[in-house]
Length: 459
Image 1 (cartoon, rainbow, N blue to C red):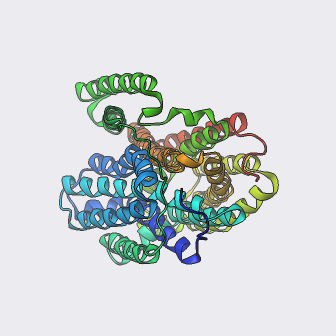
Image 2: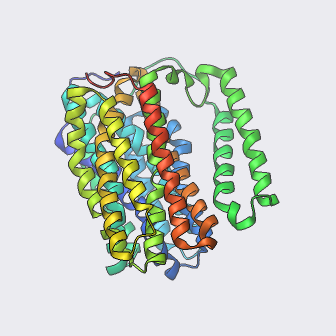
Image 3: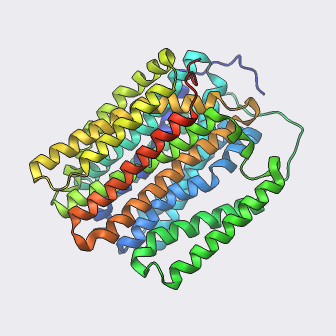
């Protein structure tokens, strides 16, 4: 391992935040600009929803691989590669005139996130210590959770007044700035003479498994849940899942995913709850589509409703850091998950009249932001501090895989529930889609209560 003599600077933190924002702010802005994209590009809603989820899906599929490569070949190199892929993905979206190029751009954005997320977390682990590490993780979380909070507002405003393509032009500028800010940082990687054959079969079956599951979820309502275009991928999913877990059990330490990490109880609790709480991202797409199509709001007005979320999550992330240092990780993680669930439940009250419902959604987003702000740094610190030194990149990759896959499947499930119930009315469909996200919060709360030790992350 590289010497810990190098102490990370504020410039490095800003560069890392720029990398995180290229995904959580700009790539996720697509959730709120679906109507604007449909007006400009001939993409059916079902295909557009699938393309939106592809970024999180491919990020989740390859983030563990990228984390392992960051450990072996260098975390700075992988971060810079992520910036380059982000630029390429944005260019594809800017030039897209059909579903194929748009989907390709979203996939490349997912690969970019796969490179940036675990590599930057590993850089924080190796370049900062103790309170400085927790402070750096707070700023990382501001880029991540704050970016996800800002994406709806920023995407709606940019799409309304400049045009949706400017979302990705600005993302390119952020990527270029991040590349310059990180340039010159000493390389960080694991020095080892031990070599393992890469688990290509495990990666292949994992990707096939997730793509088939995502297809079945997003297209089930359109094709019919018992139709062959759904049943065949569902069967392939089950087959690929069986092959993946059987192969992982045989290969153990050489497996694509190092399941030995799951023996760390605190790390497992943080990772699983992270998956579930990121699945609540489905709230953003359901609420955004409903207030625009069911209540007649513009994209900008829809984004303005999330302003409380943005302010709350940015304000509370540093509070979560201080609570982590004072009472440990478990309590703020529990409080944050409970607040998030209550906020989403308020948004599900679609029987309210327009002005009252708008107020309920605004307050709901404030609670949503407060909850995620409380949760973010304690959860991330628990995962990173519980990881073995020689597996920081891989452990960070799995933790962020949980984020990406949680977001991808949360959006896919929520949008599918909304579409399935839509014949009963937009309000009923929105309530159903939002209650799914409340259920995610409840399960996340139970997971934290059972798995995260009382003093995890308090050091």
